[in-house]
Amino acid sequence: MKVRSTQLLFVLAALWLMAGVSILSVGIAELLERHDWWIVVGALAIFAVFSTVIFPRVIRRYSTRVADMDGGPHHLWEALDMKGYLFMVVMMGLGIALRMSGLAPDWFIA
Image (cartoon, rainbow, N blue to C red):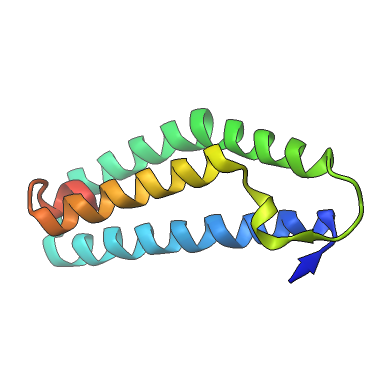
């Protein structure tokens, strides 16, 4: 499926929204089970770091990438470059491996 370059931004937003909702659901489930206030404080601290340091860089990088594309139709997978896909695979792989291995407790994953 091909879309215009401006629509690729919506593809990226949907992709990151799905990842965020998935992580949020794990965190909320753990919070409802444990009722520990320090989990909320820790989650907010980590969110603050990600929202001020990491996410703006990622948004700027891929917004610029898409803006630099010509207006013609592009395949959906062109929204990310190879480094972006590698980053996603490594992060998802580590998260899945940590959850399945039991090396990290559920509160840490949350």
